[in-house]
Image 1 (cartoon, rainbow, N blue to C red):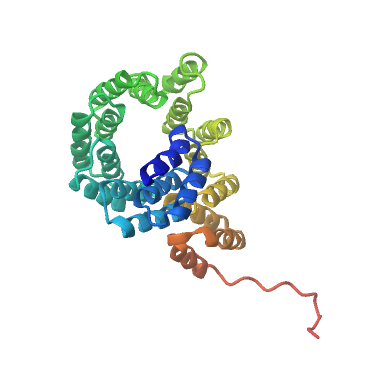
Image 2: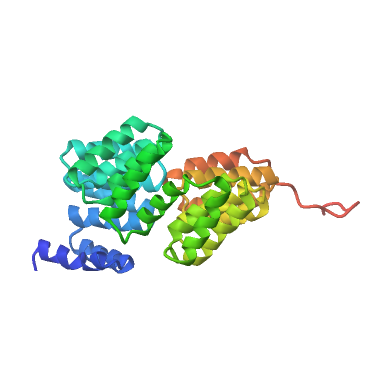
Length: 334
């Protein structure tokens, strides 16, 4: 069997969405062909999807050592940085992929999302416009254009962009939720949450993205406790990392610091490279004065922190020295 056939066979689990099996298949291939650049790049892609940032970085570095930087590895480098919350680095990687001639629009959509995260609205709009020009039948570019317009408070334009996204992908729950959210802005603030609750019982039943809209609407009304409950329900029902992170953030905003610490601590254990979670968890524990608990958590996660080890060590060094164990009054060491 030739190298191409071996790779095609190893990629079958990835195509079917079985990421654990994909890792095993690709590692088996790499056991026979250690410097296979495409197998290494695909292994990096699978590890990014699994949230294994260190493993993805190692595979991607080996792929580029074997065959140099390509459009594929540049896009993957962007995905890796984006997943870790390093949006400026991600934007640079997507720009490299584009300069090298990357086809399709995914890297442009991701570049637009990075620019939006960095508050560069013009840069976000430019990248998203190029994405929809290249692939007008795909929803992602229209969604980012809607996000840009919403950030600029041009709500009619945002609704139009989200409508185009929904037309492009009528079965996409995220596009539907964004369109609903834009239309809710026409209603009085006090009526918005009630409208979403109705939709969740009818056409939007089970749509976790619509449940997220409900949480945001409650937060916008100043009901931080209800927003936290909504995020908690979504996290419990769906278990996705985003909902769990937002549950932790909303608990912190609601002043429920003990609960926020527990949720954010679990999120950080699952995503040691996530910078916003890292910062929020440390802030909550400092607000609680829970320095020993913070120390134990950081030390437990440290072996899996990878490129973020320096940040973990830095926070550990800032902590007060551990208290000596209490001794009985009047007792002396022997």
